[in-house]
Amino acid sequence: MCLARQNWPGSEVRDEHELRLESDEDAVRIVTIHKSKGLEYGVTFSPFVRKEPWSGAKEFLKFHEDDKLVLDLEELPEHKKIRNREELAEMVRQLYVGLTRAKHRSYLIWQESSRKSKSALAWLFSGETSADAFLEKKGESTTSSRLQAAFVGSDAIAIEDLPEGAERVFAPAAARRTSLAPRVFDQEIDRSWRISSFSSLISGRTEEPDTPDYDRLEPGLEIEEEPILSTQGIYAFPGGMRAGTCLHLILEELDFADFSQLRPLVVRKLSDFHFENFDEVVSDTLEQMLRVPLGEEGFTLSQISRASRLSELEFTFPITALTTTRLRKVFQVEELPLAIDRLQFAPANGFMKGFIDLVFEQEGRFYFVDWKSNWLGPDSGWYARENIAREMARNFYNLQLSIYAVALHRYLQRRLRGYEYEKNFGGAFYIFLRGIDPKKPDTGIFFTRPQCTFVEQLDQIFHGNP
Image: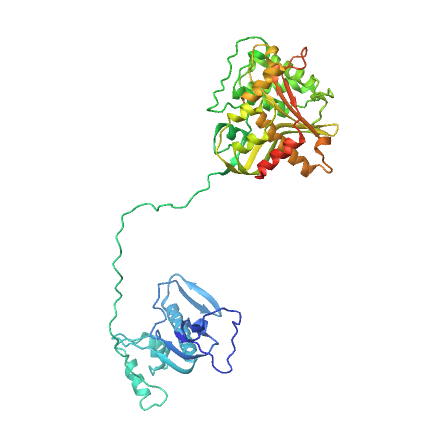
């Protein structure tokens, strides 16, 4: 049914909140008879009144019996008659709704055919008193002649032939033939935005793995793992990333204050990594390391309970416009300028990510530790402070230490009430496990406490401030 809605006097507009164009009021609206029920329109057009009740797609036979819907899978003849009567009654009801929607004029479109029509309009003008007889009767359709006879001389109803309109055939414009090709991307991608880390900065990578960095040797730095020359003690323990991962996992799970679990844990982890012949060597080395006095206070890691430490503390913080030039300006610590001059990476925006091996609290001060399994030589003398300092500069560990210091500084600012750098920030220990020697407490351990001004300046560099 085609309906044109107009603002007639006294009509109620219910969709007062609906936005529409000024021309909508005069537009032709297409709605179903079901949707039009209860509404009134100025002029209506009903183009499908010849539709027959069962002219659609074939469905299962459905009808009502004692006010209940029945589905007949066998399609018995008596049930078909009931179904046909019900559908004809529904079509008559719909025809009535369609005819009574118009206020001024209603148009019905009828097309005669040689086959007898079973539509609602044909039934109304058939003269039959039985619906079953009407539905079963065959022959030529006489609906048009009956309509003509019924309304001859009527002033209210007129029957006219549809005017013949000029034939209009849609002729689409000739489509442009184009060869099959991928679309061309002409935008720019901000390649500076990424997740960075210490490892990615020193290697020039633009993607960062989501795993801790256990003494990984980065490509392009020309830093070679020294061969294991000695066959005695911890210096004979294999080098490389696999060995570093094994030692890190032991220290992550180990309770520093409970030496009774040290040997079983070492045996299990070394077996997992196929280093079975080093149980005693690794156990002794780690026990010695836990008993070595640290810092000016002389405390030991064996004094640190599990409640006072965090292992593998992951951090992520935003960075803006990070470049090697800006880093060089802030690094003024001895040994650092030479290492920073060798550092080259693309400008970075996004986030800095990393894992701190160990963070612990001792008498109100917070320290962090990075375990190193680097092989520097066949005895503890090779792990003296000056050699470790060179190793720190050569491998850019000073940059790693500084990034971790900023991360811990930010962490404590947010988590520790009343935090003050000078009072609460203890410093950083880089512990080279192969260099631990009870007879030489200073070997194998690098300690520094960056100045507060340096940490805050580097923090501002990461923020993108000059």
